[in-house]
Image (cartoon, rainbow, N blue to C red; front, side):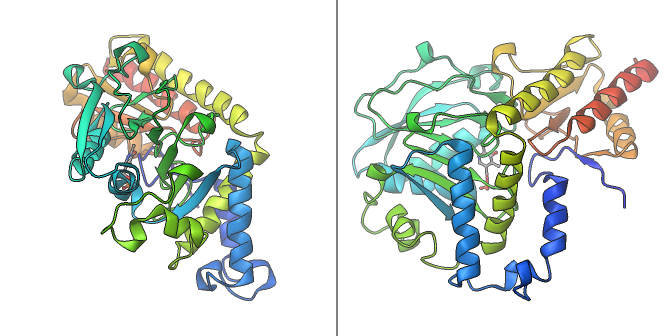
Length: 360
Ligand SMILES: *Cc1c(COP(=O)(O)O)cnc(C)c1O
């Protein structure tokens, strides 16, 4: 068996020890004689799996008691609609900070339900930076302020938590959740599709302050009401059981690594390794502003774009896969989420230095 180093933006690499445990437990989970995939979501085994996953996530992120954890489906994309449906009263407005393609999609969806005010945007510089607090035009009457905490495509990340006063802060944290400690109490709601830093696709995590639940506007589908999910412990209908189980193993794995402070240190170190190579010569370059750089997604270009295809072919040959950049940015992108080991980044860096020596 030869596992590659997978730099995919998502679905992305999972921690190998977690995959090994899933394999070991696949046919017979803890003597139950069945796979987690085959269990009733209302049986005591699965309910224990879900409760443990939630408890571990709460301890990992330090989630305060007045927040609910919801295990949903529909991806981050469905949250683009659920957030305004639940948090924006009819006739109200919300502030959105536009920092890339996912923010733009969130704005487009919210506009179907009310007025969107753009609090700031980095479109002018092709989303290569995160606007600072002093650049945000915030409306104290807004229903909420929405940010994208890490921009998966453009490779930028918030390194501060916006101060929104009494207005709830909502974050799409799909691509950097669990990569660093976060003060959950500063947020009204945090959501994330699982397939980047949590577990298998199909699960969407929502962490929401209790007072924001129960405000869903009339006429919305039952399944899009946070209150329905909160009242039913995420089992109003069948939740993505297997994905919840795997996510629970990932939470345990991160706790065993020392929690999010230790995870952050490892991520800072991995990202630095890669950015150092991008900055040391003119052969590679990185389009993002220094202070806004993401630790999770690192876009870069070669000075000679004619070498792109060769770079991708040779890196794949070396067991380094999924490095092609997103079409809206071009060049390459290395996604180095939690599950990318330091050895993977080290291998990429060594390949890049060698590639430059041979083609530079
Ligand atoms: C991947 C991604 C999405 C879309 O997630 P889905 O689960 O496919 O709906 C939204 N926002 C961000 C920041 C992402 O990285």
